[in-house]
Length: 277
Image (cartoon, rainbow, N blue to C red; front, side, top):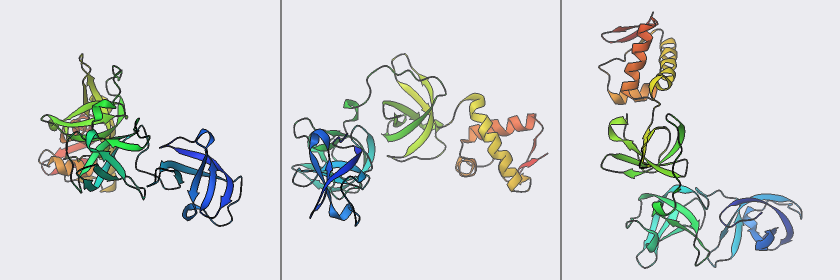
């Protein structure tokens, strides 16, 4: 079924000079311009396409993939600003996506990367973006469990850390002192739910807690030791950035992991690093 702002598998109903027309169901016939149509295309053939509107507000299809679809959050770069209309965002299609002035949480500038929600405007029936994210988050109480693994989209800095959208639904917080390295707006990360507070606020971490955090780090350390011939120059004196670059974990998790490996008599901790037993 064809839906504005979504990808669909549609069939060719007729071939014409400007391209081919696809069966859009209730939306009627939708043009797939000739630049996207391979030679020899015939009636009945199907294409996976994205449905949007062209510069004259006509429904058209494209085989290009946008950086986000209707109903999704995405981090997009500002390519132009019109003070009377709003900002235009690069979302991977020839026609840029409008971020109207009324949908801006704060004014944006060319080159800035901004996290937005993509939706169909109820008044114009056009696909637009909104940086007023709270309007589009899931308002039902979160039911995440502790240490649940989730997908995160970093929204931006706060006084305590960074806000991040969880699985495209709720907003949570990554604390500064929990981050092994700086992160940027729009980064997509794997994370964990540390806690859901009674008021519904969600604390996040980039590492699982307890054994769930330490176990995979132990495995990475042992594999690195094996590849390095049994010795590694990492220890208590290593910087958090060095630890992150080598093992993709925080220094705290690294120290817990080597402590566990030492107690298991699988490594020896030396002044200049660690070695296999």
